[in-house]
Length: 145
Image 1 (spheres, rainbow, N blue to C red):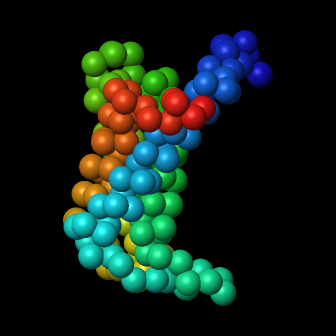
Image 2 (cartoon, rainbow, N blue to C red; image 1 turned 90 degrees about the vertical axis):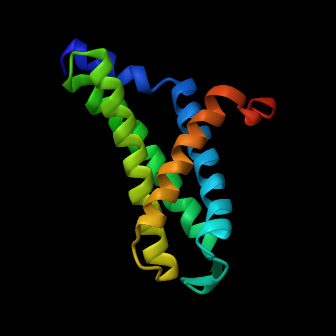
């Protein structure tokens, strides 16, 4: 493996990078779960193997997985594709927010049978934006970890 690729991989492998990606996913998932109760009226339960799980868990999980996927994709792919910092920032943000929205829709569909909709996608997008903002500006988990 060329030296430049090793340094790129080591960039994300730092414990702090993983911790920040994890915290952003927690914030995104929590905001999406609350949002599903408030805006999508998702208060039912869904079968998961042999358990009944609240539908908000599906929304939270989908948004969190989309958040992690978007952050990793942004760090590994988007940052390497473009040379302009302003374009890179716009593309990175769009990918992160879009994947969180898509993850929310997938979580809703798989767990609760909710039909894919603009509201579900929008909830995931807004949750990611608010989750990242919470991490960047407030970071309430910093008191614990």
